Structure formats: structure tokens, C-alpha cells
Image 1 (cartoon, rainbow, N blue to C red):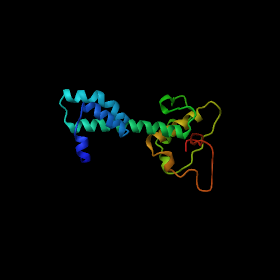
Image 2: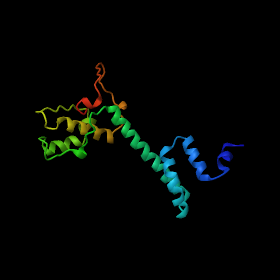
Image 3: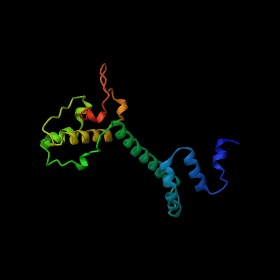
Image 4: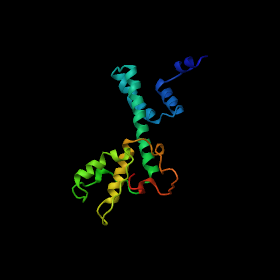
Length: 163
């Protein structure tokens, strides 16, 4: 019997078999969506290609979210601070400077950022938020050449001033 014939032949409930196959293929996000999506798609007479597209989109979105959490954990950010809880108006950093740094162009250009100032002015929060934003929009940390050749560091990525 060929592999196609083994997969195409159904011995029972196709949904149960699809769930088992998604488990075997390690597709957890697709599996979670299957139980809700298939009855809906069947009732609304979706095109089979649309069902597959939606299930694969669920898997891709789930994996993207997991990869982001993993990158943030590997980065070693101490508090999980983001720009979502950053108060731009309360900061002593001028707004145009904040906006320019948030573009992260300086990271792409491999420029160094040095942030200094008195205690309690939000330096750590701003730098961690920059690091979080970078992690949301850029490749995994391991793809960048850090530390530079000949230098070593045992400090977590988040302690390296957002760079």
C-alpha cells in the first residue's frame, strides 16, 4: 500500500484522525484550531483550500508568538518592560530623540547607544523597551555577531544597553 493510500483511507471519524495526525506532525496550534474550525467550515461550506489556509495561518501565528517569547527569554530582559507602558511625556528624553531611537535604524547601522542620566529617569525602562521592540521586529538574537570578535561577555543581552 502506498503512503498516499494510507493517508487517504479513513477508518473512522476524519476529524479524530486529523487531530491524531496533527499531533504526530507536531502541529499544536493547528490541532487546537481544528476542533472549532472544521464544524464551522463544514456548516458554512468553505472551500477546502480555505480551511487548509486558515489552519496553516493558525499554526504560523502560534509559532511566531512562541518564537517571540523564546527570543525575549533568551535575551534575558529583567522586567519585560515595553513601549506599551512607557510614558513618553514623563521622560526627560526629548520626544524627537525617542522617536528616532524607536525606529531602530541605529541597530541596523551597528551604531552604539549610550544612555546616561540621574537615577529614576527611565533609562533602563527605555533601553529594555528598545530591546523588546528590536526582538519583535528583527531576526533571532543568535543571527547577529555579538559580541564583536575578540571580546566576550557573560552579561545577558538586555543588560547591554539595548544594543
